[in-house]
Image (cartoon, rainbow, N blue to C red; front, side, top):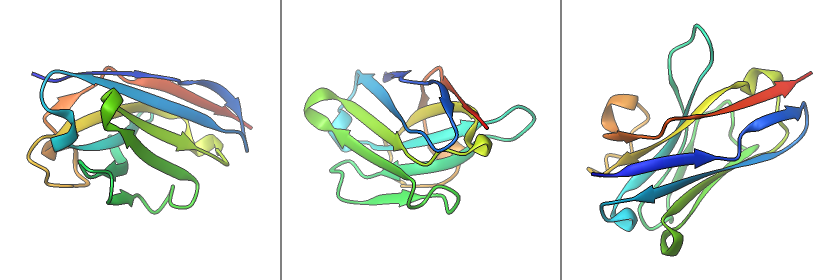
Length: 124
């Protein structure tokens, strides 16, 4: 069983930056692909960014490409999401998720384990 705990969310002004962290325990972290998703009120959960187990491959939603960067520290069992040039439309609860099957998918159903989420609010 894998447990995921996100941290780092908060209130930030448009144009600002935030770094989210997701600490994992249980399982073999370095063998899992990891992803970040977000969900705004009234919206479905959407893919934001993903990273392979080794960290050599990353993939992004078009809406965040060039502004967000996903990375991981396997020695610390942690995955990060650096968010720059934030916009009000980035406001959402952000979730990290683990993909033990290494599907490197963009859809939530491919991910077996989820954190509780952390709120990011971007003010205009």
